[in-house]
Image (tube, rainbow, N blue to C red):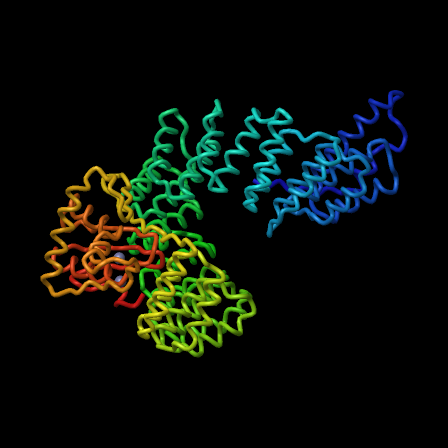
Length: 607
Ligand code: ZN
Ligand code: ZN
Protein backbone atom coordinates (compact mmCIF):
# COMPACT_ATOMS: atom_id res chain seq x y z
CA UNK A 1 0.00 0.00 0.00
CA UNK A 2 1.26 3.48 -0.82
CA UNK A 3 0.85 5.92 2.02
CA UNK A 4 -0.01 9.43 0.95
CA UNK A 5 0.99 12.42 2.98
CA UNK A 6 -0.92 15.63 2.73
CA UNK A 7 1.72 17.50 4.65
CA UNK A 8 1.67 21.21 4.73
CA UNK A 9 5.37 21.98 4.50
CA UNK A 10 4.97 25.49 5.85
CA UNK A 11 3.38 24.17 9.03
CA UNK A 12 6.17 21.65 9.46
CA UNK A 13 8.89 24.17 8.69
CA UNK A 14 7.55 26.47 11.37
CA UNK A 15 8.35 23.77 13.88
CA UNK A 16 12.03 24.26 13.25
CA UNK A 17 12.96 26.59 16.08
CA UNK A 18 14.75 29.80 15.26
CA UNK A 19 16.40 29.83 18.69
CA UNK A 20 18.19 26.93 20.34
CA UNK A 21 15.77 24.81 22.38
CA UNK A 22 18.26 23.88 25.03
CA UNK A 23 21.50 25.15 26.31
CA UNK A 24 23.52 22.39 24.60
CA UNK A 25 24.15 23.16 20.90
CA UNK A 26 24.73 19.44 20.22
CA UNK A 27 21.36 18.51 21.62
CA UNK A 28 19.74 21.33 19.71
CA UNK A 29 21.24 20.15 16.46
CA UNK A 30 20.11 16.56 17.05
CA UNK A 31 16.55 17.68 17.61
CA UNK A 32 16.64 19.73 14.45
CA UNK A 33 18.08 16.82 12.45
CA UNK A 34 15.25 14.55 13.57
CA UNK A 35 12.75 17.16 12.50
CA UNK A 36 14.36 17.51 9.07
CA UNK A 37 14.33 13.75 8.60
CA UNK A 38 10.63 13.53 9.37
CA UNK A 39 9.93 16.57 7.19
CA UNK A 40 11.60 14.98 4.19
CA UNK A 41 10.01 11.62 4.84
CA UNK A 42 6.67 13.36 4.44
CA UNK A 43 7.72 15.36 1.39
CA UNK A 44 5.37 14.34 -1.47
CA UNK A 45 7.01 15.97 -4.51
CA UNK A 46 9.58 18.33 -5.96
CA UNK A 47 7.42 21.43 -5.40
CA UNK A 48 7.42 20.82 -1.66
CA UNK A 49 11.10 19.93 -1.75
CA UNK A 50 11.90 23.26 -3.41
CA UNK A 51 10.02 25.08 -0.61
CA UNK A 52 11.96 23.18 2.03
CA UNK A 53 15.20 23.92 0.22
CA UNK A 54 14.32 27.63 -0.05
CA UNK A 55 13.69 27.75 3.68
CA UNK A 56 17.18 26.49 4.48
CA UNK A 57 18.78 28.88 2.03
CA UNK A 58 16.88 31.80 3.60
CA UNK A 59 17.51 30.88 7.23
CA UNK A 60 20.78 28.96 7.47
CA UNK A 61 21.15 27.00 10.68
CA UNK A 62 23.73 24.58 12.08
CA UNK A 63 21.62 21.84 10.53
CA UNK A 64 21.66 23.26 7.01
CA UNK A 65 24.43 20.94 5.91
CA UNK A 66 22.52 17.91 7.12
CA UNK A 67 19.32 19.24 5.56
CA UNK A 68 21.01 19.76 2.18
CA UNK A 69 22.29 16.19 2.14
CA UNK A 70 18.77 14.95 2.82
CA UNK A 71 17.31 17.26 0.17
CA UNK A 72 19.86 15.94 -2.31
CA UNK A 73 19.01 12.35 -1.44
CA UNK A 74 15.32 13.03 -2.04
CA UNK A 75 15.97 14.68 -5.41
CA UNK A 76 18.38 11.93 -6.46
CA UNK A 77 16.58 8.83 -5.25
CA UNK A 78 12.86 9.46 -4.86
CA UNK A 79 10.66 8.28 -7.76
CA UNK A 80 9.28 11.82 -7.93
CA UNK A 81 12.79 13.30 -7.73
CA UNK A 82 14.83 15.34 -10.19
CA UNK A 83 18.45 14.34 -10.76
CA UNK A 84 19.43 17.68 -12.30
CA UNK A 85 18.23 19.36 -9.11
CA UNK A 86 20.28 16.90 -7.06
CA UNK A 87 23.41 17.83 -9.01
CA UNK A 88 22.79 21.52 -8.32
CA UNK A 89 22.33 20.87 -4.59
CA UNK A 90 25.55 18.86 -4.60
CA UNK A 91 27.44 21.86 -5.95
CA UNK A 92 26.14 23.97 -3.04
CA UNK A 93 27.53 21.62 -0.41
CA UNK A 94 31.08 22.70 0.50
CA UNK A 95 32.30 19.40 2.00
CA UNK A 96 29.91 16.64 1.01
CA UNK A 97 30.01 13.59 3.27
CA UNK A 98 30.06 10.01 1.96
CA UNK A 99 26.27 9.71 2.33
CA UNK A 100 25.87 12.63 -0.09
CA UNK A 101 28.36 11.23 -2.59
CA UNK A 102 26.62 7.86 -2.46
CA UNK A 103 23.18 9.40 -3.03
CA UNK A 104 24.43 11.22 -6.11
CA UNK A 105 26.23 8.15 -7.52
CA UNK A 106 23.19 5.97 -6.98
CA UNK A 107 20.75 8.60 -8.27
CA UNK A 108 22.70 9.07 -11.50
CA UNK A 109 22.59 5.35 -12.22
CA UNK A 110 18.81 5.20 -11.86
CA UNK A 111 18.02 7.48 -14.80
CA UNK A 112 16.17 6.31 -17.93
CA UNK A 113 19.11 6.37 -20.31
CA UNK A 114 22.10 5.44 -18.15
CA UNK A 115 25.54 6.90 -18.82
CA UNK A 116 28.99 6.60 -17.27
CA UNK A 117 28.32 9.66 -15.09
CA UNK A 118 28.21 7.70 -11.79
CA UNK A 119 31.67 6.34 -12.61
CA UNK A 120 33.02 9.87 -13.22
CA UNK A 121 31.51 11.04 -9.94
CA UNK A 122 33.20 8.12 -8.21
CA UNK A 123 36.55 9.02 -9.82
CA UNK A 124 36.06 12.57 -8.61
CA UNK A 125 35.46 11.26 -5.09
CA UNK A 126 38.59 9.10 -5.16
CA UNK A 127 40.69 12.01 -6.47
CA UNK A 128 39.44 14.37 -3.78
CA UNK A 129 40.97 12.01 -1.15
CA UNK A 130 38.24 12.72 1.42
CA UNK A 131 35.86 11.14 2.35
CA UNK A 132 36.88 7.54 1.66
CA UNK A 133 34.45 5.35 -0.25
CA UNK A 134 32.50 2.89 1.90
CA UNK A 135 30.85 -0.42 1.04
CA UNK A 136 27.75 1.38 -0.28
CA UNK A 137 29.84 3.55 -2.60
CA UNK A 138 31.54 0.49 -4.08
CA UNK A 139 28.28 -1.42 -4.44
CA UNK A 140 26.50 1.54 -6.10
CA UNK A 141 29.29 2.27 -8.56
CA UNK A 142 29.60 -1.43 -9.42
CA UNK A 143 25.89 -1.47 -10.15
CA UNK A 144 26.39 1.55 -12.41
CA UNK A 145 29.23 -0.31 -14.19
CA UNK A 146 26.99 -3.36 -14.77
CA UNK A 147 24.24 -1.19 -16.23
CA UNK A 148 26.49 0.32 -18.89
CA UNK A 149 28.71 -2.80 -19.12
CA UNK A 150 31.83 -0.80 -18.20
CA UNK A 151 34.06 -3.83 -17.72
CA UNK A 152 37.38 -2.00 -17.57
CA UNK A 153 36.17 0.49 -14.94
CA UNK A 154 34.43 -2.22 -12.91
CA UNK A 155 37.63 -4.21 -12.68
CA UNK A 156 39.45 -1.13 -11.38
CA UNK A 157 36.77 -0.67 -8.76
CA UNK A 158 37.26 -4.29 -7.75
CA UNK A 159 40.91 -3.52 -7.02
CA UNK A 160 39.89 -0.34 -5.14
CA UNK A 161 37.57 -2.45 -3.00
CA UNK A 162 40.54 -4.66 -2.08
CA UNK A 163 42.72 -1.61 -1.44
CA UNK A 164 40.16 -0.08 0.94
CA UNK A 165 39.64 -3.46 2.62
CA UNK A 166 35.98 -3.55 1.62
CA UNK A 167 36.07 -6.67 -0.53
CA UNK A 168 34.88 -9.03 2.19
CA UNK A 169 31.65 -7.11 2.75
CA UNK A 170 28.68 -9.19 1.52
CA UNK A 171 27.24 -6.07 -0.06
CA UNK A 172 30.39 -5.50 -2.16
CA UNK A 173 30.74 -9.20 -2.99
CA UNK A 174 27.18 -9.35 -4.31
CA UNK A 175 27.89 -6.23 -6.36
CA UNK A 176 31.05 -7.78 -7.81
CA UNK A 177 29.32 -11.04 -8.62
CA UNK A 178 26.44 -9.30 -10.41
CA UNK A 179 28.89 -7.07 -12.26
CA UNK A 180 31.01 -9.95 -13.59
CA UNK A 181 27.93 -12.00 -14.43
CA UNK A 182 26.39 -9.10 -16.35
CA UNK A 183 29.64 -8.51 -18.28
CA UNK A 184 29.72 -12.22 -19.16
CA UNK A 185 32.98 -12.79 -17.26
CA UNK A 186 31.61 -15.99 -15.86
CA UNK A 187 34.85 -17.40 -14.45
CA UNK A 188 35.45 -14.21 -12.44
CA UNK A 189 31.83 -14.33 -11.25
CA UNK A 190 32.34 -17.92 -10.10
CA UNK A 191 35.52 -16.96 -8.19
CA UNK A 192 33.60 -14.27 -6.30
CA UNK A 193 30.68 -16.67 -5.77
CA UNK A 194 32.98 -19.29 -4.24
CA UNK A 195 34.33 -16.73 -1.79
CA UNK A 196 30.91 -15.77 -0.48
CA UNK A 197 30.23 -17.80 2.65
CA UNK A 198 26.67 -16.76 3.38
CA UNK A 199 24.89 -17.08 0.02
CA UNK A 200 21.42 -15.60 -0.11
CA UNK A 201 18.80 -15.65 -2.85
CA UNK A 202 20.31 -12.61 -4.61
CA UNK A 203 23.74 -14.26 -4.80
CA UNK A 204 22.36 -17.52 -6.22
CA UNK A 205 20.13 -15.68 -8.68
CA UNK A 206 23.01 -13.52 -9.92
CA UNK A 207 25.16 -16.60 -10.58
CA UNK A 208 22.31 -18.42 -12.33
CA UNK A 209 21.54 -15.40 -14.49
CA UNK A 210 25.25 -15.16 -15.36
CA UNK A 211 25.20 -18.69 -16.76
CA UNK A 212 21.86 -18.03 -18.43
CA UNK A 213 23.19 -14.90 -20.14
CA UNK A 214 25.82 -16.85 -22.07
CA UNK A 215 23.59 -19.92 -22.54
CA UNK A 216 25.43 -22.34 -20.26
CA UNK A 217 22.17 -24.05 -19.51
CA UNK A 218 23.58 -27.17 -17.86
CA UNK A 219 25.54 -25.02 -15.40
CA UNK A 220 22.57 -22.70 -14.79
CA UNK A 221 20.32 -25.64 -13.98
CA UNK A 222 23.00 -27.36 -11.90
CA UNK A 223 23.27 -24.20 -9.84
CA UNK A 224 19.47 -24.00 -9.63
CA UNK A 225 19.33 -27.52 -8.17
CA UNK A 226 22.20 -26.85 -5.78
CA UNK A 227 20.45 -23.74 -4.51
CA UNK A 228 17.37 -25.73 -3.57
CA UNK A 229 19.48 -28.42 -1.92
CA UNK A 230 20.85 -25.83 0.49
CA UNK A 231 17.30 -24.75 1.26
CA UNK A 232 16.96 -21.49 -0.67
CA UNK A 233 13.66 -21.14 -2.51
CA UNK A 234 13.79 -19.44 -5.89
CA UNK A 235 11.63 -16.41 -6.66
CA UNK A 236 10.29 -15.11 -9.98
CA UNK A 237 13.58 -13.33 -10.75
CA UNK A 238 15.51 -16.61 -10.52
CA UNK A 239 12.92 -18.32 -12.68
CA UNK A 240 13.21 -15.67 -15.41
CA UNK A 241 16.96 -16.44 -15.61
CA UNK A 242 16.47 -20.20 -15.72
CA UNK A 243 13.74 -19.90 -18.36
CA UNK A 244 15.84 -17.59 -20.51
CA UNK A 245 18.77 -20.03 -20.34
CA UNK A 246 16.47 -22.72 -21.74
CA UNK A 247 15.31 -20.30 -24.44
CA UNK A 248 18.87 -19.49 -25.52
CA UNK A 249 19.83 -23.08 -26.18
CA UNK A 250 16.38 -24.21 -27.27
CA UNK A 251 16.05 -26.74 -24.44
CA UNK A 252 12.30 -27.36 -24.67
CA UNK A 253 12.00 -30.29 -22.26
CA UNK A 254 13.97 -28.47 -19.59
CA UNK A 255 11.92 -25.33 -20.22
CA UNK A 256 8.69 -27.31 -19.82
CA UNK A 257 10.01 -28.86 -16.63
CA UNK A 258 10.86 -25.42 -15.23
CA UNK A 259 7.38 -24.16 -16.16
CA UNK A 260 5.80 -27.11 -14.33
CA UNK A 261 8.08 -26.40 -11.37
CA UNK A 262 6.82 -22.79 -11.24
CA UNK A 263 3.21 -24.02 -11.18
CA UNK A 264 3.94 -26.67 -8.59
CA UNK A 265 5.73 -24.29 -6.23
CA UNK A 266 3.10 -21.61 -6.70
CA UNK A 267 5.69 -19.04 -7.79
CA UNK A 268 3.90 -15.88 -8.86
CA UNK A 269 3.87 -15.59 -12.65
CA UNK A 270 4.29 -11.85 -13.12
CA UNK A 271 4.47 -10.02 -16.42
CA UNK A 272 8.21 -10.50 -16.78
CA UNK A 273 8.01 -14.22 -16.11
CA UNK A 274 5.12 -14.66 -18.56
CA UNK A 275 7.12 -12.81 -21.18
CA UNK A 276 10.12 -15.06 -20.51
CA UNK A 277 7.86 -18.11 -20.94
CA UNK A 278 6.49 -16.78 -24.25
CA UNK A 279 10.02 -16.16 -25.45
CA UNK A 280 11.18 -19.62 -24.30
CA UNK A 281 8.35 -21.51 -26.00
CA UNK A 282 8.76 -19.47 -29.18
CA UNK A 283 12.52 -19.99 -29.29
CA UNK A 284 12.19 -23.69 -28.48
CA UNK A 285 9.87 -24.13 -31.45
CA UNK A 286 6.57 -24.54 -29.60
CA UNK A 287 4.78 -21.46 -30.84
CA UNK A 288 1.28 -22.75 -29.94
CA UNK A 289 2.30 -22.98 -26.30
CA UNK A 290 3.79 -19.48 -26.44
CA UNK A 291 0.43 -18.27 -27.73
CA UNK A 292 -1.35 -20.05 -24.89
CA UNK A 293 0.77 -18.29 -22.26
CA UNK A 294 0.19 -14.98 -24.05
CA UNK A 295 -3.59 -15.47 -24.24
CA UNK A 296 -3.73 -16.33 -20.54
CA UNK A 297 -2.07 -13.10 -19.48
CA UNK A 298 -4.47 -10.65 -17.87
CA UNK A 299 -2.32 -7.57 -18.38
CA UNK A 300 0.22 -7.27 -21.19
CA UNK A 301 2.85 -4.62 -21.61
CA UNK A 302 4.81 -3.68 -24.72
CA UNK A 303 7.45 -6.34 -24.04
CA UNK A 304 4.86 -9.12 -23.80
CA UNK A 305 3.23 -8.09 -27.09
CA UNK A 306 6.61 -7.67 -28.76
CA UNK A 307 7.85 -11.11 -27.66
CA UNK A 308 4.74 -12.68 -29.15
CA UNK A 309 5.06 -10.72 -32.42
CA UNK A 310 8.75 -11.64 -32.73
CA UNK A 311 7.95 -15.27 -31.87
CA UNK A 312 5.38 -15.52 -34.66
CA UNK A 313 7.77 -13.80 -37.05
CA UNK A 314 10.69 -16.18 -36.47
CA UNK A 315 8.30 -19.06 -37.04
CA UNK A 316 7.40 -17.63 -40.41
CA UNK A 317 3.78 -17.05 -39.29
CA UNK A 318 3.71 -13.68 -40.98
CA UNK A 319 -0.06 -13.27 -41.20
CA UNK A 320 -0.46 -13.96 -37.47
CA UNK A 321 2.40 -11.60 -36.63
CA UNK A 322 0.85 -8.76 -38.61
CA UNK A 323 -2.62 -9.44 -37.21
CA UNK A 324 -1.31 -9.41 -33.65
CA UNK A 325 0.48 -6.17 -34.39
CA UNK A 326 -2.76 -4.48 -35.53
CA UNK A 327 -4.49 -5.78 -32.42
CA UNK A 328 -1.73 -4.32 -30.32
CA UNK A 329 -2.34 -0.92 -31.92
CA UNK A 330 -6.11 -1.26 -31.43
CA UNK A 331 -5.54 -1.96 -27.73
CA UNK A 332 -3.55 1.27 -27.62
CA UNK A 333 -0.32 -0.48 -26.57
CA UNK A 334 2.62 1.51 -27.85
CA UNK A 335 4.95 -0.65 -29.98
CA UNK A 336 8.69 -0.28 -29.47
CA UNK A 337 11.75 -0.97 -31.60
CA UNK A 338 11.59 -4.71 -30.81
CA UNK A 339 8.03 -4.94 -32.14
CA UNK A 340 9.15 -3.32 -35.37
CA UNK A 341 12.12 -5.65 -35.76
CA UNK A 342 9.55 -8.46 -35.49
CA UNK A 343 7.11 -7.22 -38.10
CA UNK A 344 9.70 -5.86 -40.53
CA UNK A 345 11.69 -9.09 -40.47
CA UNK A 346 8.43 -11.03 -40.92
CA UNK A 347 7.76 -9.02 -44.08
CA UNK A 348 11.34 -9.58 -45.25
CA UNK A 349 11.21 -13.34 -44.69
CA UNK A 350 8.06 -13.68 -46.72
CA UNK A 351 8.74 -11.06 -49.35
CA UNK A 352 5.84 -8.74 -48.46
CA UNK A 353 7.39 -5.70 -50.03
CA UNK A 354 4.47 -3.24 -50.06
CA UNK A 355 3.39 -4.14 -46.52
CA UNK A 356 6.98 -3.71 -45.35
CA UNK A 357 7.20 -0.30 -47.01
CA UNK A 358 3.91 0.79 -45.43
CA UNK A 359 5.03 -0.28 -41.93
CA UNK A 360 8.37 1.42 -42.39
CA UNK A 361 6.60 4.70 -43.16
CA UNK A 362 4.45 4.45 -40.00
CA UNK A 363 7.43 3.94 -37.67
CA UNK A 364 8.27 7.58 -37.18
CA UNK A 365 4.57 8.50 -36.85
CA UNK A 366 4.50 6.12 -33.88
CA UNK A 367 7.48 7.92 -32.40
CA UNK A 368 10.07 5.22 -33.05
CA UNK A 369 13.34 6.39 -34.53
CA UNK A 370 14.61 3.62 -36.86
CA UNK A 371 17.76 1.91 -35.64
CA UNK A 372 20.39 -0.13 -37.49
CA UNK A 373 18.36 -3.34 -37.23
CA UNK A 374 15.32 -1.72 -38.85
CA UNK A 375 17.36 -0.42 -41.77
CA UNK A 376 18.77 -3.94 -42.03
CA UNK A 377 15.26 -5.43 -42.31
CA UNK A 378 14.34 -3.06 -45.15
CA UNK A 379 17.57 -3.78 -47.06
CA UNK A 380 16.88 -7.49 -46.60
CA UNK A 381 13.28 -7.06 -47.78
CA UNK A 382 14.30 -5.15 -50.90
CA UNK A 383 17.12 -7.55 -51.78
CA UNK A 384 14.99 -10.65 -51.33
CA UNK A 385 12.25 -9.27 -53.53
CA UNK A 386 14.59 -8.43 -56.39
CA UNK A 387 14.79 -4.67 -55.76
CA UNK A 388 18.56 -4.65 -55.55
CA UNK A 389 19.08 -1.21 -57.13
CA UNK A 390 16.58 0.35 -54.73
CA UNK A 391 18.29 -1.37 -51.79
CA UNK A 392 21.63 -0.05 -52.96
CA UNK A 393 20.32 3.54 -53.14
CA UNK A 394 18.58 3.09 -49.77
CA UNK A 395 21.86 2.04 -48.11
CA UNK A 396 23.76 4.93 -49.65
CA UNK A 397 21.16 7.39 -48.33
CA UNK A 398 21.04 6.06 -44.77
CA UNK A 399 21.50 8.79 -42.13
CA UNK A 400 23.66 6.44 -40.03
CA UNK A 401 26.71 4.60 -41.36
CA UNK A 402 25.60 1.07 -42.35
CA UNK A 403 27.06 -1.79 -40.33
CA UNK A 404 28.62 -4.97 -41.67
CA UNK A 405 25.33 -6.90 -41.53
CA UNK A 406 23.71 -4.42 -43.91
CA UNK A 407 26.66 -4.52 -46.36
CA UNK A 408 26.61 -8.33 -46.22
CA UNK A 409 22.87 -8.42 -46.95
CA UNK A 410 23.48 -6.09 -49.86
CA UNK A 411 26.26 -8.34 -51.13
CA UNK A 412 23.92 -11.34 -51.09
CA UNK A 413 21.41 -9.25 -53.04
CA UNK A 414 24.16 -8.27 -55.45
CA UNK A 415 25.00 -11.93 -56.05
CA UNK A 416 21.38 -12.96 -56.57
CA UNK A 417 20.61 -10.10 -58.94
CA UNK A 418 23.91 -10.67 -60.77
CA UNK A 419 24.80 -6.98 -60.46
CA UNK A 420 28.49 -7.75 -60.38
CA UNK A 421 29.50 -4.15 -61.08
CA UNK A 422 28.52 -3.13 -57.52
CA UNK A 423 30.26 -6.06 -55.83
CA UNK A 424 33.69 -4.37 -55.57
CA UNK A 425 32.45 -1.28 -53.77
CA UNK A 426 30.22 -3.24 -51.36
CA UNK A 427 33.07 -5.65 -50.65
CA UNK A 428 35.39 -2.74 -49.88
CA UNK A 429 33.04 -1.43 -47.17
CA UNK A 430 32.43 -4.89 -45.79
CA UNK A 431 36.07 -5.93 -45.53
CA UNK A 432 36.96 -2.56 -44.03
CA UNK A 433 34.47 -3.10 -41.23
CA UNK A 434 35.10 -6.80 -40.73
CA UNK A 435 38.45 -7.89 -42.12
CA UNK A 436 38.54 -11.00 -39.96
CA UNK A 437 35.13 -12.52 -40.61
CA UNK A 438 35.50 -15.61 -42.77
CA UNK A 439 31.83 -15.46 -43.79
CA UNK A 440 32.57 -12.32 -45.83
CA UNK A 441 35.36 -13.99 -47.81
CA UNK A 442 33.23 -17.05 -48.46
CA UNK A 443 30.39 -14.86 -49.66
CA UNK A 444 32.62 -12.75 -51.89
CA UNK A 445 34.21 -15.86 -53.38
CA UNK A 446 30.72 -17.07 -54.18
CA UNK A 447 29.86 -13.77 -55.86
CA UNK A 448 32.98 -14.00 -58.02
CA UNK A 449 32.45 -17.70 -58.68
CA UNK A 450 28.90 -17.07 -59.86
CA UNK A 451 30.34 -14.58 -62.38
CA UNK A 452 33.10 -17.07 -63.31
CA UNK A 453 35.75 -14.59 -62.12
CA UNK A 454 38.14 -17.35 -61.01
CA UNK A 455 41.15 -15.11 -60.62
CA UNK A 456 39.29 -13.03 -58.09
CA UNK A 457 38.17 -16.18 -56.27
CA UNK A 458 41.78 -17.24 -55.74
CA UNK A 459 42.63 -13.62 -54.85
CA UNK A 460 40.09 -13.89 -52.03
CA UNK A 461 41.64 -17.10 -50.83
CA UNK A 462 45.06 -15.47 -50.71
CA UNK A 463 43.73 -12.42 -48.87
CA UNK A 464 42.10 -14.68 -46.34
CA UNK A 465 45.37 -16.47 -45.70
CA UNK A 466 47.33 -13.20 -45.51
CA UNK A 467 44.91 -11.74 -42.97
CA UNK A 468 44.96 -15.01 -41.00
CA UNK A 469 41.18 -15.18 -41.05
CA UNK A 470 39.76 -17.94 -38.92
CA UNK A 471 36.47 -19.57 -39.81
CA UNK A 472 33.89 -19.17 -37.00
CA UNK A 473 33.16 -22.73 -35.94
CA UNK A 474 29.58 -23.82 -36.39
CA UNK A 475 28.04 -25.03 -33.13
CA UNK A 476 24.80 -26.95 -32.83
CA UNK A 477 23.09 -28.17 -29.71
CA UNK A 478 20.42 -30.71 -28.96
CA UNK A 479 18.79 -31.54 -25.65
CA UNK A 480 18.43 -35.20 -24.72
CA UNK A 481 17.06 -36.29 -21.35
CA UNK A 482 17.56 -32.98 -19.64
CA UNK A 483 21.12 -32.46 -20.83
CA UNK A 484 22.23 -30.17 -23.63
CA UNK A 485 24.79 -31.74 -25.97
CA UNK A 486 26.92 -29.47 -28.11
CA UNK A 487 28.53 -30.39 -31.40
CA UNK A 488 31.18 -28.63 -33.48
CA UNK A 489 32.75 -29.52 -36.82
CA UNK A 490 35.70 -31.82 -36.31
CA UNK A 491 35.04 -32.22 -32.60
CA UNK A 492 35.51 -35.88 -31.74
CA UNK A 493 35.03 -35.52 -28.01
CA UNK A 494 31.45 -36.77 -27.78
CA UNK A 495 31.44 -40.19 -26.04
CA UNK A 496 29.02 -41.63 -28.60
CA UNK A 497 30.89 -40.38 -31.66
CA UNK A 498 31.24 -43.87 -33.11
CA UNK A 499 27.49 -44.48 -33.17
CA UNK A 500 26.89 -40.96 -34.55
CA UNK A 501 29.34 -41.68 -37.40
CA UNK A 502 27.42 -44.85 -38.22
CA UNK A 503 24.18 -42.94 -38.57
CA UNK A 504 25.88 -40.22 -40.65
CA UNK A 505 27.20 -42.87 -43.06
CA UNK A 506 23.75 -44.38 -43.36
CA UNK A 507 22.24 -40.95 -44.04
CA UNK A 508 24.87 -40.09 -46.59
CA UNK A 509 24.33 -43.36 -48.53
CA UNK A 510 20.56 -43.12 -48.53
CA UNK A 511 20.59 -39.41 -49.44
CA UNK A 512 22.97 -40.08 -52.34
CA UNK A 513 20.61 -42.75 -53.70
CA UNK A 514 17.90 -40.06 -54.06
CA UNK A 515 20.17 -38.37 -56.58
CA UNK A 516 21.12 -35.44 -54.36
CA UNK A 517 24.24 -33.59 -55.52
CA UNK A 518 26.21 -32.06 -52.64
CA UNK A 519 26.41 -28.30 -52.99
CA UNK A 520 30.11 -27.80 -52.41
CA UNK A 521 30.64 -24.23 -53.55
CA UNK A 522 30.52 -22.92 -50.00
CA UNK A 523 33.39 -25.12 -48.88
CA UNK A 524 36.27 -22.82 -49.43
CA UNK A 525 39.30 -24.84 -48.45
CA UNK A 526 41.68 -26.16 -51.07
CA UNK A 527 40.56 -29.74 -50.88
CA UNK A 528 39.46 -32.26 -53.44
CA UNK A 529 35.84 -33.06 -54.17
CA UNK A 530 35.52 -36.05 -51.87
CA UNK A 531 36.97 -34.19 -48.91
CA UNK A 532 34.64 -31.29 -49.59
CA UNK A 533 31.67 -33.60 -49.43
CA UNK A 534 32.92 -35.09 -46.19
CA UNK A 535 33.35 -31.63 -44.69
CA UNK A 536 29.73 -30.86 -45.55
CA UNK A 537 28.50 -34.11 -44.02
CA UNK A 538 30.00 -33.14 -40.71
CA UNK A 539 28.57 -29.65 -40.35
CA UNK A 540 27.59 -29.33 -36.72
CA UNK A 541 23.82 -29.54 -37.28
CA UNK A 542 24.23 -32.89 -39.03
CA UNK A 543 26.08 -34.28 -36.02
CA UNK A 544 23.29 -33.00 -33.74
CA UNK A 545 20.54 -34.38 -36.00
CA UNK A 546 22.28 -37.77 -36.20
CA UNK A 547 22.58 -37.81 -32.42
CA UNK A 548 18.87 -36.99 -32.14
CA UNK A 549 18.09 -39.88 -34.49
CA UNK A 550 20.28 -42.17 -32.40
CA UNK A 551 18.65 -41.24 -29.11
CA UNK A 552 14.97 -40.78 -30.00
CA UNK A 553 12.33 -42.45 -32.14
CA UNK A 554 9.54 -40.95 -34.25
CA UNK A 555 7.19 -39.19 -33.56
CA UNK A 556 9.56 -37.36 -31.18
CA UNK A 557 10.56 -34.10 -32.87
CA UNK A 558 14.30 -33.54 -33.30
CA UNK A 559 15.06 -29.98 -32.19
CA UNK A 560 18.44 -28.47 -33.01
CA UNK A 561 19.80 -24.98 -32.38
CA UNK A 562 22.64 -23.65 -34.53
CA UNK A 563 24.77 -20.52 -34.00
CA UNK A 564 25.18 -19.75 -37.73
CA UNK A 565 22.87 -19.73 -40.71
CA UNK A 566 22.13 -23.12 -42.20
CA UNK A 567 24.09 -23.74 -45.40
CA UNK A 568 22.26 -24.65 -48.62
CA UNK A 569 23.46 -28.23 -48.60
CA UNK A 570 22.50 -28.96 -44.99
CA UNK A 571 19.10 -27.40 -45.65
CA UNK A 572 18.54 -29.69 -48.67
CA UNK A 573 19.80 -32.78 -46.88
CA UNK A 574 17.66 -32.13 -43.79
CA UNK A 575 14.60 -31.93 -46.05
CA UNK A 576 15.52 -35.31 -47.53
CA UNK A 577 16.17 -36.85 -44.08
CA UNK A 578 12.73 -35.73 -42.87
CA UNK A 579 11.15 -37.67 -45.73
CA UNK A 580 13.43 -40.73 -45.82
CA UNK A 581 13.36 -41.37 -42.09
CA UNK A 582 9.88 -39.99 -41.39
CA UNK A 583 11.20 -37.57 -38.76
CA UNK A 584 10.05 -34.05 -38.00
CA UNK A 585 13.15 -31.89 -37.54
CA UNK A 586 13.14 -28.31 -36.28
CA UNK A 587 16.33 -26.30 -36.72
CA UNK A 588 16.68 -22.84 -35.22
CA UNK A 589 19.52 -21.08 -36.98
CA UNK A 590 20.91 -17.63 -36.23
CA UNK A 591 17.95 -15.95 -37.89
CA UNK A 592 14.84 -18.10 -37.80
CA UNK A 593 13.17 -21.49 -37.54
CA UNK A 594 13.07 -24.23 -40.15
CA UNK A 595 10.50 -26.95 -39.64
CA UNK A 596 11.27 -29.95 -41.84
CA UNK A 597 8.39 -32.34 -42.45
CA UNK A 598 7.96 -34.89 -45.27
CA UNK A 599 10.69 -33.39 -47.44
CA UNK A 600 9.70 -29.72 -47.23
CA UNK A 601 10.71 -26.83 -45.01
CA UNK A 602 8.42 -24.24 -43.43
CA UNK A 603 10.63 -21.45 -44.80
CA UNK A 604 9.77 -22.51 -48.37
CA UNK A 605 13.50 -22.30 -49.10
CA UNK A 606 13.33 -18.55 -48.56
CA UNK A 607 15.76 -17.67 -45.80
ZN1 ZN B 1 25.91 -27.14 -43.69
ZN1 ZN C 1 14.15 -23.85 -44.18
